Image 1 (spheres, rainbow, N blue to C red):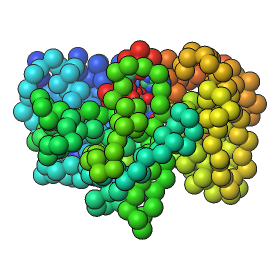
Image 2 (image 1 turned 180 degrees about the horizontal axis):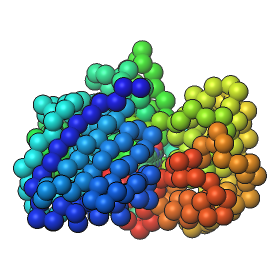
Image 3 (image 1 turned 90 degrees about the horizontal axis):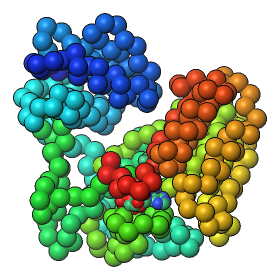
Image 4 (image 1 turned 90 degrees about the vertical axis):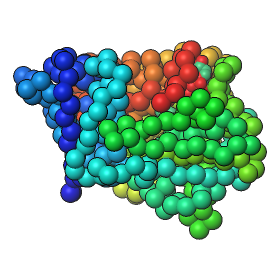
Length: 355
Ligand SMILES: Cc1cc2nc3c(=O)[nH]c(=O)nc-3n(C[C@H](O)[C@H](O)[C@H](O)COP(=O)(O)OP(=O)(O)OC[C@H]3O[C@@H](n4cnc5c(N)ncnc54)[C@H](O)[C@@H]3O)c2cc1C
């Protein structure tokens, strides 16, 4: 596969401290090797080297697609600022996409209709203004951008010269939340996003899902996140990961083996599942316990009949603390390598999750 590459460097008072901070921060999510003042990361979407060289911090990254490269560049740019403590820094990327100022993965759409799939899962059907084919391929997840006032013309983000995404501020500030494109219809130009009507007070994502009216404008950035091609899959997730687990199951070809542990509140939250692969789908019920506290996924994964890591991919999507526990358990108790596991904190107990 041809990778798209870019590189940058910036003079900093202590570039090594920035390399150290990247190392500490990202070790949890990807395979990192350290060689003195340089660290190399490998992920399923690409690789890169971050290093301290002659008073400069340097980054070289290679990624599988333009969208991913853009996200990695903006992630590196934002973390250089955060880790160095500098308010502004002037640096440029060279290589692929260096001149890009518009976000190539920004889409806009309008709500067509909303309806409940179950008592606590509400679907919004969104008509995409242009580019639906790109939105329906290349990944499951998107950031939805909720605009502050439907009566005003929205202001969308753009890319700075440093590769960072410049988000509108003040009265134009957008609220960002990560959701899954559950399904879509390219002919009609529509996508379906399913919103969990969860507990909580200040929750713009769930509120948008519950109250959006036909015609409401929404921004969408993405997509990202794909499933590797292996033989055996184990998925564990709560209702926030139900859309992606149902979509991954629906798109999985025959001949694969899939086991799913899906935690929901009660029987009324079950949804129809379709899958050509050999699938064992287990519903786990909280029966009134608060989401993120029942421990059902950890228990199910501990009791799963693990049969080695060859050709295995494990996906875990649930409350952040729970997903970390499951990841640790899979490594410590079942010796499943990090490279076979994709765990993600889908939400954070007691906190707004502004990704
Ligand atoms: C890759 C990815 C894909 C996702 N796909 C979907 C999807 O398709 N559908 C979907 O509904 N969600 C999905 N999520 C989860 C969603 O992004 C979070 O639930 C998000 O926090 C919702 O934002 P909010 O504004 O409603 O609440 P926030 O402002 O983030 O949080 C407000 C309060 O609500 C609580 N809270 C948030 N989510 C939950 C929950 N699920 N249960 C109980 N309490 C909660 C928080 O702890 C906090 O106290 C996904 C997350 C990721 C990372």
